Length: 382
Image (cartoon, rainbow, N blue to C red; front, side, top):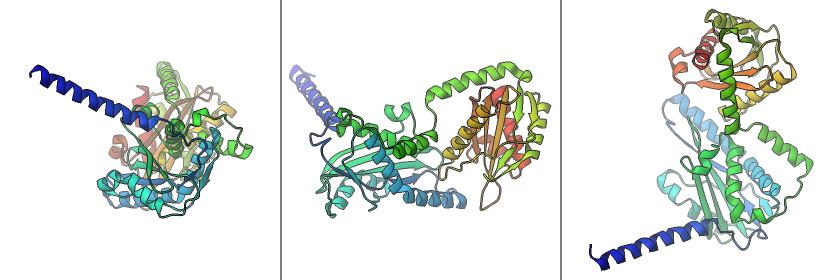
């Protein structure tokens, strides 16, 4: 390569890098109209991905989940409004007029333009319009949070995609809808100038609503690190660890004490610990539809709360939760939670048809589920 060619190549590379940098800067630069500009928040949409047609039950579950997410779209938009208001921004309106982004790869590429065209045909009363979409993998939770802002004429102002592999997404992976909305709000902060606003005290009922929603969130990574240390302490205790097994929750609406008795006997026979079945225990509340992860963490938080309020005469307590498929009546999922004497989580686990031990045992009865819990505890404690 001669000198002039090398110079030209370097110039072109510099120009390309400058262009890319400018585009990124524009993406994050606050819009001068904000935070004074007004905006309409449209219902949050959701697209399902994964092996949706793996079998009839998968397809039915995916369809039901998508319908439920669409039904909850206006409520999720209300929550996004609450998060913006928490940051001091209250110049928004909410609409129940739903918009659905196009399907397939082509539809995804044209999401911003499609929303802009949709808004341009409305009599929008605010300066801008905003819509957020979640991508939810049927087996692997949330994969993307996409947000777009257009002006009243449909012109694209800003769009943003946060997905698996992106640092901000992976730093605290969304395990539920609220985490997705909080991620969207963080991404909107600089664009809408929210960081320049003075935070206002939310009305008491709004603070309470956000507090309840945050109580159902997936814990932060620091909590998982603390759980790892507690698990190491339990493993170190070995067979001397004393575990109280509470009556199993079945179907979310009743308890089975005989299941706790059988499970404690299995734990003792396997010499994992010194297990005792509690004669009575709570019927923990919370279903968390449509996200099974939400079911798990609602159950886990209820278990932790009970363990803190009712200290057991043992080093650890075990809560187990079984759910049957409404279509096949076979076991759909098994959740279990171990807390230490202080009521802190040691193990929180979900098992369903996507996990190898569940697939191997294929639980159809409570006794099958008890064997599954035993196998999983062996994995954790040995």
